[in-house]
Length: 431
Image (cartoon, rainbow, N blue to C red):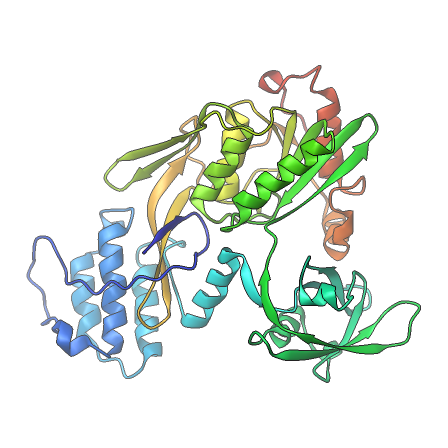
């Protein structure tokens, strides 16, 4: 089974061991039979070649003779999987597409867990205080073991299983937190105003929230603020819950924050666009044969209240599909800076040894038909943010979506003035 994905892999399993199809051409080396490749690293090499041959968006393979490439790859002897992986990576690099990539088993498992929205752990988000270099809790995820044990924002994590965190970077600390469901991890915690204490937390499967939302009182406006982190498999359900809950709280306008969102599942971006748009085209997906698959709104919008979308240079892929559709259908005002500029869709495959392959299968275009690759989506209202402000928001995420966040502050200003500058006529402005 495979799934179209605009950025990162989904938890899918499918093995491709088919022999080459199509017109045969003379080869310089004999190709091993399928029987000869069973239990050999060559089997993975040929799996990858077959998928790329069948699906890669560029039928000319970046002017690489892909049939000859198969002959070259299978003529080599691989004494271990690592050698085969290196050969695969080299072959994919020749295609000139950074998004067609091979993932070793550990990478593939990590990314599939991320996109599925579920991981094994204790359920905390951590950060490093740039002033003291202390590791601290940013958030205990709702209904997680960490929340049940009473951990809260600001708690300093002094030791993990007896090892001082002062000797760890954030990645090492995250790895130390990981483990099998049902296993324990011991944390020494320092909390302001209290003596240091130790907690033993049992790891469990955690559903990672795809978004956070809250109602913000901004003068006369009740602003529904939604920060969407990624387009994972549970993002659609959580977005529906967020919009519905905020409307029940008498929200008068929305800010949808896509800053830093790297993308995710194509269909999640389409489903979420339909929650905001009553009509109009969302995206046009074009395969290597020139076939078009156009997605449209289907009169299932949950709200027609004023909307501002926040984007930046790290808003990519599915984020750009959503931002582009809302902007070009004049459903929202986009505020921030140009988005990343990733205009392709990947299909993700799990290979027979637990490794994975993401292969670019199509290109996508916003309703205008513009090619956004490397250009991105331009905001209606340009609002830059200084490095100092970026550092401040990174060091203290609680400031995101407040008056200390200049892009959010500009979004609120836009909402206040929408009556005077309708979306379809709003000028591009700069700070």
